[in-house]
Structure formats: C-alpha cells, structure tokens
Amino acid sequence: MNFENILKEALSSIQDSRVKDAMAYSLLAGGKRLRPTFLFEVLKGYGVKEEVGIPFACAIEMIHTYSLIHDDLPAMDNDDMRRGKPTNHKQFDEATAILAGDGLLTYAFEYASHAEIDPKVGMDCLKVLAEKAGASGMIYGQCLDTLEEMSHTDLEELKRIHNYKTGCLFEAPLMIGAILAGKEKDIAKWETIGETIGLAFQVQDDVLDVIKTSDELGKTNSDVRNEKVTSVSLLGVEKAETYMRKLYEESCKMIEDIEGFESKSLIELLKGIEARGM
Ligand code: GRG
Image 1 (cartoon, rainbow, N blue to C red):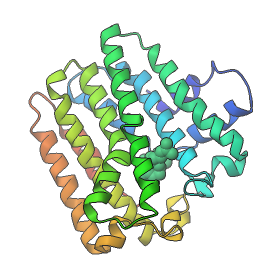
Image 2 (image 1 turned 90 degrees about the vertical axis):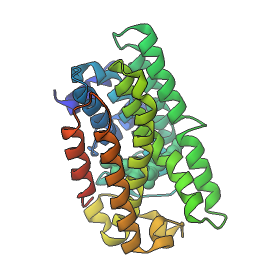
Image 3 (image 1 turned 120 degrees about the vertical axis):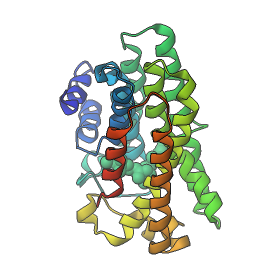
C-alpha cells in the first residue's frame, strides 16, 4: 500500500480550481502521516486488513492538514513555513488558504462516507471523527489556546488545552481502528491511550521547538514570538523531557494491556516517535 499515492488519488474527483491546487499543495507536502499510521496499526494489531481503514485514514489526514493551514494563518499563529515549504497563505493567499482548509474539512467527510462498510459501523466512525475534530474536540482546544494567549496558564490548564487541541486527533484514529475491527469494548481504552500519546507528542513538540532550528523542523516556531505558555516555559527543557518519556511509557503499558491485541508493531512505532528529532 502506497499511502501517498492513495492520498493523491483521493483528491482526483474534486473540481479543478485554485482551491483544489491549494488543498493538494498542503495535503501532498509530506508530513509524518502519524494519525493514519495509528489507524492502520490498530487494525494490524487486531489482525484486520489495513485496506479497510483507507477512507478514514485519508479523512483524518485531510482534517489534520486543514487544522495546520488554518493554524498558520495571520489571525492565528501567523507562520511562514510548514512541512518544509511556505505555508498555504504564503504560497497562495489568505482567502484561498481559508477555503483550502474548509475544502479539506468538508471533503474528508464526503470521502469517508464512501467507505464500503456496514453503514452502522461507518456512521459510528463518522461520529467519532466529527466529535473529535469539532467544537467539543480539537476546535474547542484551539479556542482555549487562543484565549490562553491573553491569560496566565498553569500546567493543569495547559494539559487540558493539549488534550483537546492535539489529543483529539490522536484519539480519533485509534478509536476508529477499534470500531472498524469490531472491538467496541476497547474504544474507551484507545481514547485514553490517544489522549496520553497526544500529550506526550505535544510536550515533545514544545521541547523540539526550543532545541532545533526552523530548518531542521521544516516549520517556523511562532510560540516564542507569540510569547505562548508551553510545557517548556513552565517546566524547563529537562523536566519537560522527563515528563514526555513518562507519558510515552504509560501509553506503551496501556497498549500492552489490551487483550487480544498484538502490540509489538505499534509500540515500535511509538518508540520511533519518542526518538524523533523533528
Ligand atoms: C485551526 C481549527 C484549528 C485547529 C488547530 C492541530 C491544531 C489545532 C493546530 C496545529 C498547530 C499545532 C502546533 C498543533 C499541535 C499538534 C501538532 C504538534 C501538530 C503537528 O503535527 P505533526 O508533527 O505534523 O504530526 P505533520 O506535518 O508531520 O503532519
């Protein structure tokens, strides 16, 4: 399975236009594809064919990409570089970047709705996707994050922001993987695992932002410029790194404890993410 080609093909039925070009520009710009990979790993661990997850894996990457495009806009973080290239509004213009984000978000649901699976299973997956991406999920987190810029934030409040803003899009693929595998009993466990991985990933992102250059990361770091409270500004690099390792360890332990799940491959993936330098 070549996921990059699948993503490219997924856009092919969209009307040719400047907004389609802008959607493709950011979606096909690389990125680590972690969220789709998590979905495929859950299926694999339960012994289900990974292909079953393709429509939802693509949809999650589209939603993730839309969130990055909008987060980079001047009204939000105002960043110039993303995935090693100029941000969408720098390459096109602000109006087109807003539309490209809107287009990716909407198309994610259209594309996933074509999944050839039991309609009840499909609806359950769409529901998780909408809840985790929406105004009680990632968007709520972004809203708290925007307000946080205007007030003092302690570690508990920061964790809450991260759980919504970053965690929700890690929870969704893990939960959807469990639904597609017919393992409803495990959904709540995957939700907790996603929340913990999301927090670990975000703390790691904060650490990398201060110890790496923009060129190494392929993106600009607006947090320092925007004087944002981060896990590093609250804990310092060393303690933040220790906290991050503890969270990854907890995630691995919870994964190992899931009955009937072959955890080796997913744990290897997590160890790789923990060791990542970008
Ligand atoms: C604007 C609706 C809206 C939401 C924004 C997810 C998000 C909420 C903003 C993105 C900015 C950010 C720093 C989010 C934290 C999560 C994070 C570290 C995202 C980057 O994810 P990676 O590293 O990116 O997986 P790639 O490019 O590899 O896919």
